[in-house]
Length: 158
Image (cartoon, rainbow, N blue to C red):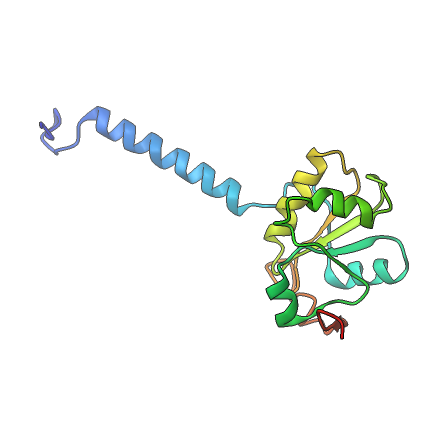
């Protein structure tokens, strides 16, 4: 196999182009995966989500796993629906009283899963989904539900 290019460096023009294209594609995929929020995706801070939930203005849904719920507790007045469930959307719709246009806020540990799930739900016709971007444990968007000392309850409730 000839690995020497025309310039004697060992890199052919084709090899450089293929590696460059692969790097660009990998970088774009990584950027899309790591950038969960688009500019038009609504976000709420944890304190605002708590206030709106207490006021009855939205339904708060903790989409983490039961293991996470047991470890930290769950937000007061929230619904717990593991986002990995095959019937997640029907369970969410039931929590919203059958109304895909009812306001709902999704929370996870750090806001990554909730942002992705919010986009998926929008694609399914849910029109009023917001992401609690700082999550339970904090993120670049804020310290999180627990650090803000917002109320949590044990899961499962005893």
